[in-house]
Amino acid sequence: YLVTNAQAVLQLLKPYQVVAVLQGHTHIRETVLHHDTQFITSGAVSGNWWKGPREGHPEGFGHFRVRGGKLSWTYVT
Image (cartoon, rainbow, N blue to C red; front, side, top):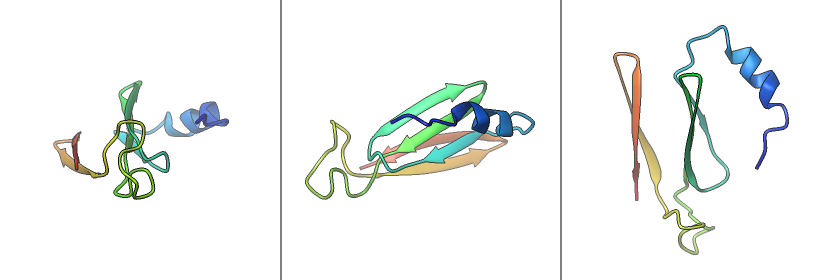
């Protein structure tokens, strides 16, 4: 999937110290780092609409922790 207004969104975020952008809908796990901001897609508990893994990504959810302004996360299946 492609965000057609990605440049406009990045411009809106630029003045702020955005640590992470959490996104979904694709049911896969993905992390993209862009200028110190993590763009995280953390999968889905429904996987491939309850039929098992989607493109090799098992069903699950993201577990996020923020400490001292730093974000870390793991995927829980």
